[in-house]
Image 1 (cartoon, rainbow, N blue to C red):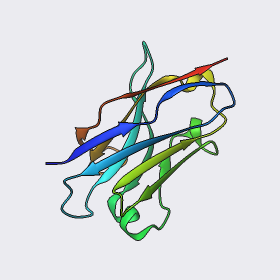
Image 2: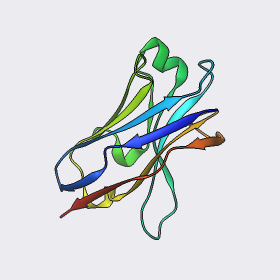
Image 3: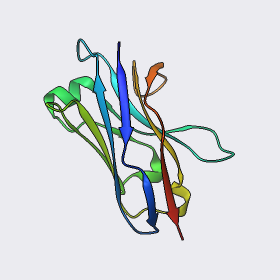
Image 4: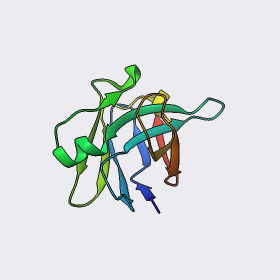
Length: 125
């Protein structure tokens, strides 16, 4: 059974930084992706960044970002620790949301069947 544990949220001023962690367990091969999602109050959940299990194993840097975070957020991983990180810099109030990591079949149009608990990120202006 795949399990994900997200952590690292908090309160930060605009322009500040936070790093979220998603510790994963239960994968039996590299045929999966880890996506960070976020959901702000009153808004739909959106995908933020994504990395494949193969990219994690190979540490090849391949990843996906939604346009609004490109250049500010960086997804990375530690294969030995089975942990995916989302480093967030130059945070804006509009980044305020509950952030979730999820495991799925593919970054775009994929099905995500395993979810970590949300971690709140609040960016004050």
